Image (tube, rainbow, N blue to C red; front, side):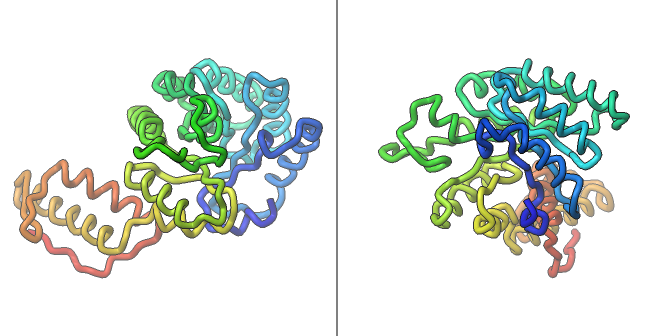
Length: 293
């Protein structure tokens, strides 16, 4: 937890679920709350993954962590979400604890992990379940198990299948997320030493339009950050498209324009804006001047 404060990541979640043995759940809550209160987390999103709602730990996870460290908490990650009622339950409980502790109503967000067949089947309803919801996260391990995929490694596609085993769940989660204004996050790749496999998985999710990918080891961070950052040429092109379209639509009152021999219009602008926003967020800087007209 101490190391996590200084890592070049956008979000850190402190885990009360799979990373904690059953006998240590209560102690882990206190440790997580203390870690949230201590130290400088910078601009990182501070999150806690609680246990799923079907366990006997979930309600105490939420109550104790928010009571002890709610002012230092941005998001609750709820695992194994199988229907909108799970989100509704967490929303109501958060509202009660926020009110009791004098915290800003609705100040703590929710990220929902989609981890099995039922959750994927209900993903559209889940995405619409609460204004607190900020992201949908693909959970490959439990999802693979729920479908009976023949793989023993988290996030590693099953051998013997020539297609992309994760394309359908990733795309369905992405569509549900975007239709409700949510972020879409890919799950982890557990084969830590396999940088090539991680790079391929991250690049595929980024190409689809995902906003990020979980990592399980600091050694994976640079590979994933690189995959989700547009290349310099791609970023420059996106910014030039935005400039050219702005000039055409305002100064020239035209709905389309030519840029380096290619027609651009409103649809092109939307594509370019998505790339430009990712580049700006990654700190990319333009080097090529605008070419309006």
